[in-house]
Amino acid sequence: MLGPLEVTMQGTIQTPAATKVRWTLALLLLRANQVVSRASIITELWGEHPPRSAVTTAQTYVYQLRKKYQDRFSELGRGEFVQTRSPGYLLRVDEAEIDAWVFERLGEQGRMSLEAKRFEQAARQLRAALALWRGPALADLPAGPLLTPHVTHLAEIRTRILRLRIVADRRLGRHHELIPELQFLAADNPIDEWFHQELMIALTETGRRADALQVYERLRSTLAAELGVTPSPRLCQLQHDIVAGVPWTPGPPTELDPVVPPQRTGPS
Image (cartoon, rainbow, N blue to C red; front, side, top):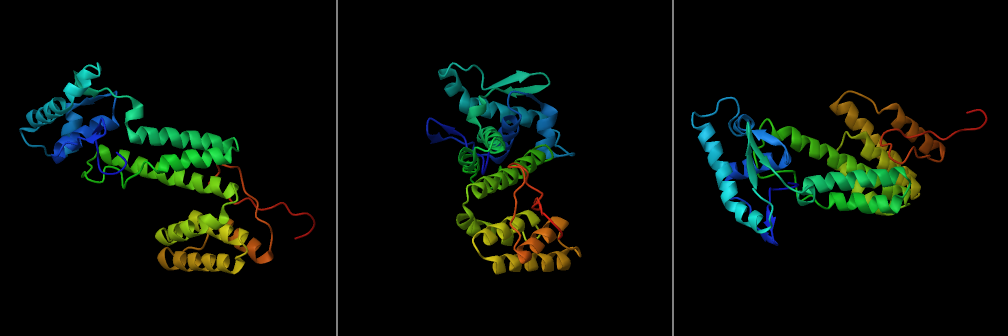
């Protein structure tokens, strides 16, 4: 699911060729172990104006899926590949067989490891989660009203897990290794303050304060030109601290937003 839809059985790719059959399978997979109504399938495939033959055609797509995969499921003693359950169909599958579910599980494990300050383990788990992606989720399908929220959800989780992995690597002191990746991410997300923040921190931690300040100035100019706004207070504080040579202090391991200003003693 994390890329073009792909079905692998015994090491062989056996993905349906017809777009709407793959589309139907994607909906059943993303709602695996739940009943998906025929109405939902019809809405996903044809929107608000389905053809008169929609019910029969949807049934045909499910029949084609059964025909393609049922023999293998029977060999494994797993019963029906797709069960008919009022008011529609249910696809039973082990969560470990769907990359999107494995991705979310690994991401949650990585988050918990990071929270427990097991940074090496967190980085490994989060990297393994991200490695499952082969491109945008369901990249070969024109997602409709039901699949689109799933695709958006997966993309948002991917971004969060990427950020958590960056935090884990930063906590391991991998500032030099992070700089090229963060430069790309900041360029690819020109108004995303978080990636710019992390790039500024990595540059500062490797003795490149002037470059860190240039990153801030580029962001400030872009925000002003694109949105008519200024950087957030936390970015302004980070810029001020870099100029003043104040050491940067990280927040909680899994906190992705605030830069925690260091505690100062005496007058400012």
